[in-house]
Image (cartoon, rainbow, N blue to C red; front, top):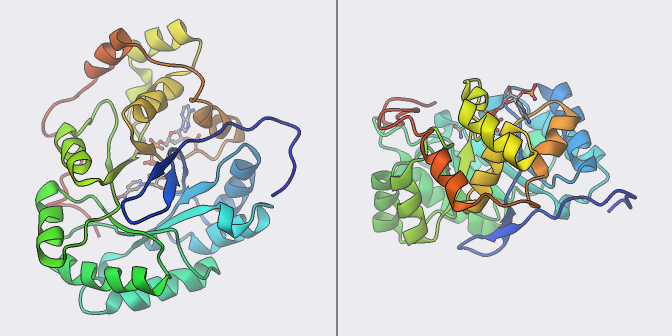
Length: 283
Ligand SMILES: NC(=O)c1ccc[n+]([C@@H]2O[C@H](COP(=O)([O-])OP(=O)(O)OC[C@H]3O[C@@H](n4cnc5c(N)ncnc54)[C@H](OP(=O)(O)O)[C@@H]3O)[C@@H](O)[C@H]2O)c1
């Protein structure tokens, strides 16, 4: 590890049900290309990030690997997630899918391998999960999980294999709080990870409720939202290409939202039907 004269934020680790732990805030990398993501990871490492989220589908795993290598931080001190593309679901294709990702990343293992989407119309996700269990046993994926899975999809994984995912990564924010997913995950010891945690390309951050809370706490709207994720026990992976925003997005461990604040944030819920429906989306 490099010495730094600046005190970096201590990012809490959440335990995973198969062992190990995941830093509660990481860097999202979609839609950065190889060159952009390499630079972003070096910048992110300098302000304290040790967790990065990519996917085969993002086409930037080569840049992620280069960024981690150039970061000055040992590989063992990083938490790297990638996701299996839909074309590699079924039979043993996940073996080749992960090998191709590792080759692009220039790594011996990933910390977390996710099934990117359930694609229920194809009904290959249980088969894929059986291969994931072997990949975890091989050490090439230290933990395995899913993304965009509904509780009913995870029920099938558990019923048919006995192995519960460590993580379910879903679109989640105060606007799309997915209380049903979170309750299910908590009951089953699954870490819930939020993609588009600050609303992605939408206008969540412009909401006046967030402006009020940001003024009250002397923070930015994004920090209020990220603090909401942290206090709810979620993992958040905000994406930014801007080093100042990256640093701000990690500086959410030194203030607390009170019950009134949390009640105000509940009013951002856009209700049933908001967000992607993974029965009809994905790749
Ligand atoms: N599993 C899945 O199916 C799935 C789907 C989508 C995304 N993901 C993952 O989740 C990550 C995050 O999701 P996302 O990228 O869709 O959305 P997001 O992280 O909620 O939002 C990213 C947007 O917010 C801006 N931003 C970042 N920090 C900010 C700040 N402090 N103040 C104001 N704006 C800020 C970014 O712009 P700048 O870069 O200009 O700062 C970017 O436009 C992705 O990068 C990807 O790794 C997973």
